[in-house]
Image (tube, rainbow, N blue to C red; front, side, top):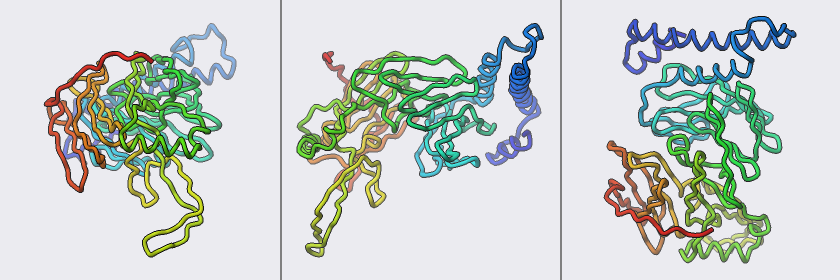
Length: 397
């Protein structure tokens, strides 16, 4: 293990001092010692050990809880801003590819402030490893639990406290699980926070924000299958959303610790991608199709992003001023910045013919820059602090 760490330091042009080597070994011995104690205790209990026999901890659950906390804390480093980017296998962290030898990484959640990241590794047949690391730590990723997908999600940390639910997402240092209007936020080695979700809302499966750094997750309104498949209602809703004549609240950002809700003016109608069936060429440029279907997709059939999808249209992260979201609202006519702690809003871009997409980047002083794209041109706001934020009046419902 020491050789691996030394190689990792050398790859970054660094050399470990004797004091750093001793510090690393001390932390590693402590983590390994806790793990050995837990395994020995679990074995003794399985063999019917006498209650009066001395034990290193009160019970196996307490031992494993301490072990998980130690494993996570051993990978703590000096907090450093980190940029995460989704890939088909794994992800990019500060532009560097992160993959796992134990399987394909299918989902991840990172803390952009500290570099902590938790991810799911596919093991086949609905089984996944839940792994944790810090991008800036010399220690390798560690398995902190397992996930089983079978008519729902069952997450079990190594401290043997399973949580089941309808949706699950990884965060920087834990997981968030939602079940029937209740949300459980599990931070590894700590207690589980429980919150009631707003009526009619559920956890969105995809999150394009820093959940760990801000405490907020994205929710979306539960829409019945009949509403989704109603062609007249669907086309009408889509027209209103694209044209900007709606006041939708199909999405909201929700604080997992306090239950605070910030509703967003976004419609789920733009999440879908349409595709024709039984199509025949009418002219060289036009085809006639006898059928048409649509489904929610992040990407178009040609591999390009479906920019109407909520994943691309709602981003949030921690800033020096507090948790902040940048959101495409009112169809695709506006890009707005929202301070999540007090609901203050400011408009970045507004265009009646629509905005193609936007990009968000952190600045050196802890703020954000936003680049809007339309008509094949970039439009830059270098610092959102130059905007005038207004706190909207409270609304009912």
